[in-house]
Length: 298
Image (cartoon, one colour):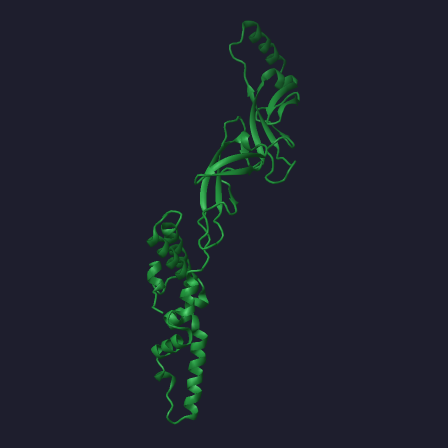
């Protein structure tokens, strides 16, 4: 079996770390993946070589055997047994030879006599199953779109996928749909689809986790005397009672009027309202006179 330099295939040195090997493999796998190089036999061959190299070098035990025995790394155990056998024979034979006399080439010939020149690994290699490429996509939605769970059909790589969008997904949240990526190689499993949600907030509410925040203008008279006002929520209108003497920047919390909690059906965050006091302008002469009277009373 011809020696294959796995380090050269991945473009890394023999002292490369596991992380460097992993990064090199991912970069090359994306470049030569069959889904990105249809009908390209050279790319397909390169892709198989890359996967084979990663299979060996990403496994610490396999890498150790490969570094020590080269192309015969899969027969390392037989190598050691043969070496031990020769060492034992040397102890009982005056004409025997030492393990140093038994070179790597001798063992290579020994393996070829046992397993054939093509080797079992090269035959197995063509049958190795590889997972298909993972796909990444972005889905842009409005905040109101994710208040309730709903289904939507999206198109990825010319394939239509029916997707159930759960209520309460976060902006920039990524979900995985198993098996909806690229097709596997040699009967391997399909890749996965990773969808990143981009949520556009075009409402009056500010979202922070499961809570919603809103600012409500409050006129001076209601602030002083108290009363009732109607406000908008995601569930429609809500009536609020205003206490007499409500101050500017007062906050009230409406339990369960916020945003749905992701994958917890029927549970919601809160809606926090901040009152902003509106001072009346363009007062009439009569109004100014009345305020002066109030000022004297205070």
